[in-house]
Length: 145
Image 1: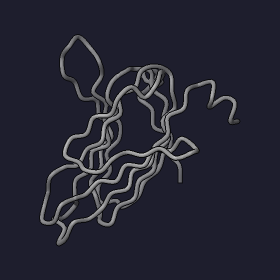
Image 2 (image 1 turned 60 degrees about the vertical axis):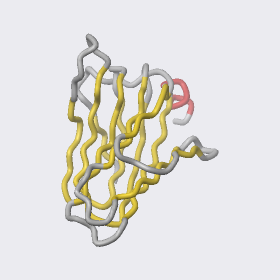
Image 3 (image 1 turned 90 degrees about the horizontal axis):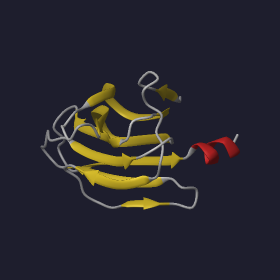
């Protein structure tokens, strides 16, 4: 099931994937021929620490994503906008106790868009989260219809 996530008329993502920032993480993001980027992250045994992956975006793009995990997670997707040099967080989506999700959204405001995962329960062993995402500019999205 695909969901459209938006923050009213304020967000329509444009530009290029400018940089990536990870909080507590491991592994590398890799892009395949279709433009999907895969990021594998580990939730460490007996941990309740969050695992975060951020994508810095500029301009008018569409972000499609999907993830699956070995264990139930509490997930939030948020934005750290580039405003006045101050640190802000705008929560876009939150879900608890899920193993998989997919969706897409358009946004207008440049900043770091972050997937943040926390284990719903402390895992008995190291577990994996597999995040896949694709960023399209409006021209490429229009040509794919």
